[in-house]
Image 1: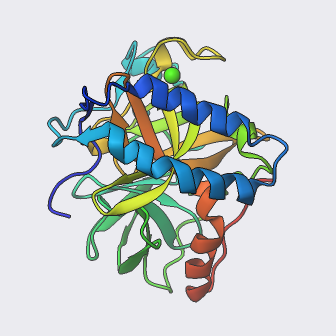
Image 2 (image 1 turned 30 degrees about the horizontal axis):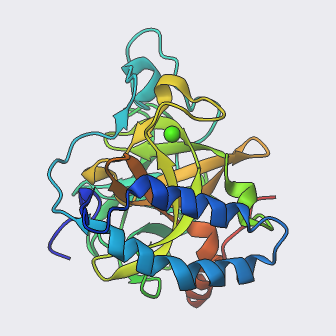
Length: 303
Ligand SMILES: [Ca+2]
């Protein structure tokens, strides 16, 4: 797509309709809450049926404007910049490995799933022929590995894109391959603390508060939403994040059994109220796996 999708600064117009986005999110939350104890596929089917039309009616999409760094409420380089090399480093993600988050020479993201396949955003992914670099540690001058993207494919009509390197290339084993967190009910994802990765190698936190369908720019999918309201439970304090344009395609993780587990790929945002939207990766586990199978690989679930 010629135009960036991630900071389509969304606004609520439809004054005549006189509905506010807060109402929309409240409604989605109710739907998500209603999913507990219900067969997850039926719950998803119900949400898919009812909500896209509401969303389309309420949101007016506007062109993106800025390409700044991911917003972190109380940004402090020693805490939020993965590659900070000054004194007093206190990286918020120090306990976990972000080595599998790759960055291309044109500034696009790819998150490693298997030996040579990665996940990105359809509207903003590393291009075929580009090089994607992974760093083993949290030091920019430390060991890094670079591979050339040789192909990729979109997942159905979603904003997910699987890219790959040559089949003979095996990404160095010091680089993390991320599993996907599969839980039996949607409600169990709500309230999860997320580690959000973004431009420029910033890491912050947020709390997953809504799972809902979304459409924009020819893509449609189930999203994980997290607001920028400074009112999370559990509290993430000054680590709270709000995505910006260059963050598209980068990941959000949850911690499961002390390791990072992939939850989302950054897609879009809303304004008033300010909120970030990822494509909700667990929804597409099977679709991703079908494509990985054609490459002789398979996706792992967190255990
Ligand atoms: Ca929040």
